[in-house]
Picture 1: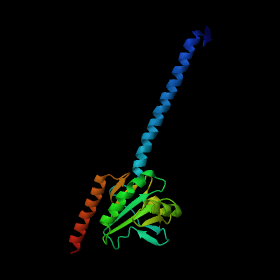
Picture 2: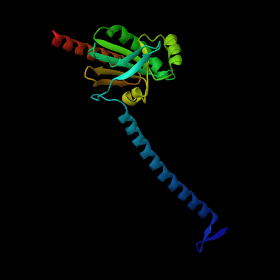
Picture 3: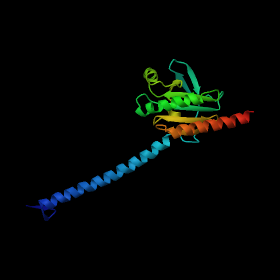
Picture 4: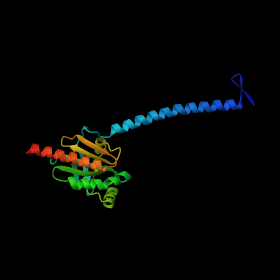
Length: 198
């Protein structure tokens, strides 16, 4: 069967092939654009997470029982360690055992260890009780925490120096190597801090 198209005779088969080629060309162009968008999105996402050397500001937190706290509280501590989580995050649950270990091993007068939930207080209280998170748990008092700590991905485990600099940010599930690294970094800084204060 011949069809007249733009003054030429083409078969139905040729017409269908041309249509398929045109559609595939548009699909390729569209997919190239999508790939570029995803790459840019990945870079933007990476740029939104706190990195080593970034400076932060003090934020207001509130305990599950309603007591307020400034964080980081560097007036009494050489370092701060924060565990950031969300109660709906399955990966956060995988970190609880390691966070509890770090809390037990490192807690003391020279380090301020807090867990911060970016979910509602009532849900957080149930979560802490259900999964046995040992670190003192807080919620942000206002949006300043979200703006400064940028918790776009959870879980995060962040070490903060006395001068409000990010020393390390471990994003995701902690490995045994990460736990050892956190302990080593903190113990080394404690040793330096105490040598200077003698």
